[in-house]
Image 1: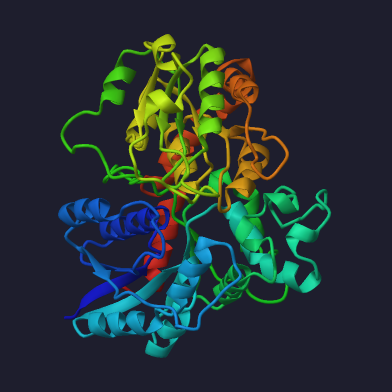
Image 2: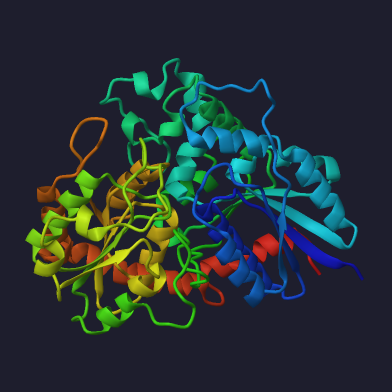
Amino acid sequence: MEEQAVVLYSAPAIGHLTPMVELGKLLLARQPSLSIHVLLPSQAYEGGSISSYIAVVSATHPSITFHHLPPTTLPPDYSTTSPHLETLALELLRLNNPNVHRALVSISETHRVRALVIDFFCTNALSVARGLGITCYYFFSSSGNSLTAFLGLPVLHRTTTKSLKDLATDTVLRFPGAPPLLPSDIGELLQDRNDRAYELLLESATNMLMASGVIMNTLEKLEVEAVKAIRDGKCVPDGPTPPLYCIGPLVSSGDGGKAGSGGGPANDKPECLTWLDSQPRGSVVFLSFGSLGVFSAEQLKEIATGLERSGHRFLWVVRSPATGKGHKAVSTAEPDLGALLPEGFLERTAGRGIVVKSWAPQVAVLNHGATGGFVTHCGWNSVLEAVCAGVPMIAWPLYAEQRQNRVFMVEAMRVALPMEEAAGEERSVSATEVERRVRGLMGPEGEAIRERMQHLKQEAQAALNPGGSAQVALAELVQSWNIA
């Protein structure tokens, strides 16, 4: 009898790959006879090193095979006015179909491919799957609230003529099941309807309706209204919505941690965890901003001053400042803390604060008893890790869909206080605001969020237990693939 396989097609950045691999592990736990194949396109830009992560997963899960697709190249006459690095990534993924076709045909020679699961960045592979008679599912690795906005994009496009960036700043955008958004809350890739990135994401949102289902990494109890609106068909008024499978919260089990710049040594306990062992329970604020989260040198000084003035204990992951414009100009150089932070800061805060260079084991830190708050860039993987650990958050978005996540986290999910930025393109945050928010979260103002996080932590565990909502959704998904 042929071995049965499910093929996962991920976008190459670590923030997309990690939840996709966790989905693979989940499928294997349910159906150990399955073979999981992950298609990995070559990277268009440096989105965090993934090789160490893949090595760990391959060693611990031999039933997961990674297929590195050959590099794709843009035609010699290609040009774009789009300012976004993601546009290049999306274009290269669009040109990847021949590679995806070859990989699927090759895997099909020795396996019965039951489904192709594609990242929402990889929308063009839908036609490849159809051509080969393979059912295709979308994997949406952000929030349910974000999915309501994504599904609503074609409607918004048809009913407006202006780009989001040209709308009045106080224009209220309404998507079913989600709190109201302002144009500036929507990710930069969707701000200009004449931008190539906008066109490609609009195409992805439209194609999603042709998928056999949408798999979403969320906890239903965290986003009740958004999930209900999607299921009730309110986000797609003029046609059917594919079945929705909420199989989350999927969080990394710690394989290589957040691969911002590779993990620490495998067997040595990181110094920051040893330091946490000596701190009072729930007393430490953890600041970490994802694999692409970088700040200017000026902003780092403001954060330092705010933390010092707050009087609270802290564990802060600092990366080298941006090497150019925008938060994507990631430097892999080790940060020079003495030069970057205010003079005497490390000495004055010694004992009650620790600054870690470039990387920390985020899941382990969040689950440590001493951690009482989390200042996050609102990346969805990080939000779910905090929910599973029961740690309240301060929402400080930097890029992608994170600004709308902040609105959802504060207004709909009630899991965070918002960090308020100054007006202007730089969106800087003052030391005063850092101090105010840290004190607020760790004091009486954060009490309601702390209670809610403890409740959601239990809900997350219940969802993942046998008979829980995530397990039921997973069973329905596997059943739809007719896997024996």
